[in-house]
Image 1 (cartoon, rainbow, N blue to C red):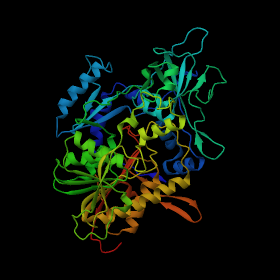
Image 2 (cartoon, rainbow, N blue to C red):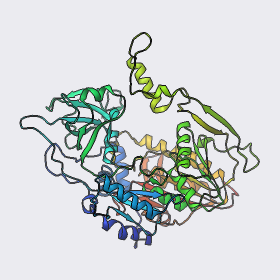
Image 3 (cartoon, one colour):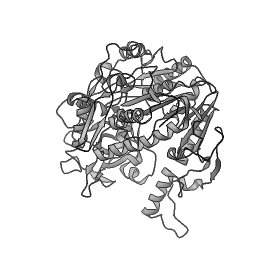
Image 4 (cartoon, rainbow, N blue to C red):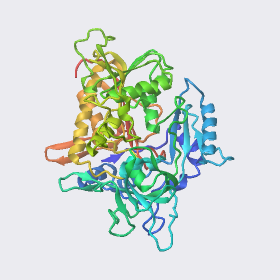
Length: 566
C-alpha cells in the first residue's frame, strides 16, 4: 500500500550516485521523463497503456503519482549500460581502456573524452558506459514531399532504443521508392486489441506507406518516432530478404552504444540489479550452488567469478537451446565450475536420490543439417520451383527455434532427473515472471489481474522447490525483473508464513530501496498481503524512477533454519 522510508542512503548506493551519476553528461536529460520537444508528429513521447484493473492495482501499491512516473520511466532506456568484467581473463582497467578505444573508433565518444565510462569503487569489476538523450531529431524531408519512413515492430523498436540496428524481420511497412542509401524516419507500431480479445499490431508485413493520414496506424504513431537511419537495402530487398541489417540507425532519440560481439569472453552486458543479485547470494569458493532458471547465464557466470571458479554451480533450464547458450557463455569466459543441465525447475527435486551429490543424468545429442538455416539464398527445388510461403515460414521457425519437437539447434546437452533434497548450500531463484520492470517498454496492456495472479502462483511453486533443495543453514535468494507486488512482496509474505524456519536476511550490497508494505483487497474472498515495515527494509526494490535509473527489479534473501516443520 505504501513504501517504507529510509532515512539515509547506504554507503554503496551513495557511492554509485557520487562516482557515477554526476559524471554522466546526459544525467539531467535522462533522469526525467522525456519532454515533448514540440507538438509535431515526429517526436518520441510515448504513453504506456495498462489494463485499467492492473493500473488501479499498481496505483494502490505505489501511489497514483509515483506509478505514473514509473510508467513514464519504463518507456525509455536507462541512461547507462552496466558491464561486468570477467576478471578470470582480464582486468577492469584493461577492459576500460579497450572500451574507450572502441567508443572512439565507432564515433560514439570524442577522441579527447574518457568520461563516457565510469567505475564504482564498491563494485570493482563493473563499468558504466553512459549514453545521451532524449535528442530532438530533424528528419530529412524534401519540400512538398512526404518523409520516407519505415514502421518497425514494437520489440524491434525497444531493441533500437537500447542501441541495436534494425534487422529485416523487424520491418513491418515501408514507403514506396525507398532505395539503398536513402534516409528514412523510423516509427513504431504497438499492439492493438483484436476482435478475438487478443492483441496484435494489425499490419500486413510489406505494407506501403505514402506519408498521408490514410496510412496504417497514422494517428497511432504520432509521437512514436525513434530516430532516423540509412536504408541498407531497397524496399524490395527488405521484404525479400530473410535476415540482415535493413536500416543502419544514424540519428537516435536515445544514443547508447551497442556491444554486440565486442570483447567476447571478457565482458558481459548486464543490468545493475542482476549484478547485485549475485553478490547478495554471497557464494563462497568450494560451495555447491543451484541456479534454478539460469538462462542466459549472466547471473550464473557472475556467481562463478565471485567463487573464483572454485566449487560447483548447477545451472538449469528446460530449453535445449538455452542450456547450449549457458555452456557457450561459460566456455567463452573460460569458466569450469558450471554444469548446465536441461531440466524444468519444477521437476528439480528427486526423492529417489539418496546421495546428496548424486545426479541422475542422460545425455541428449541432436544433430542438425546446417543447410536448413541458410536462408540467405532462396533456391529452386529439383522441380524448378521456389519454396512456398508456408515452407519459408517453417524454415524461419527452424532458424529461430531449431528443428523438430526438441526445438534444438544441435549439440549435446545433459538431461537431469533431479537432485536430492538439502543438497545445495545456496539457491538462486530468478524465475520466469511478468517482466514488467524491463525497459524500454512500449506496451503493457496484455497483462491482466488474472495473469498477474497466475505469475504469482507459479513463483510460489518454484519457491517450494528451492526450499526443498537448500540445506539447513543455507541461503535462498529470490529475484524478479517485475514491478508486480504479487510476484515480489506477496511471495516473501507466502514464504515467511509457510516456512517458519525461513527468515529474511540483510543484503550486501544494498543499492535498491525498500519494499512495498500493506495489502490489496481484490474482492471479498481474496486479499493480497505484502510486508511489514521491518520486513520491507530487508528486501531491495529497484524502481525506474529512483536515482539509480535501473530496470524494475526485486531481491529477497532468506536464511534457512532447521527444517523441523513446513
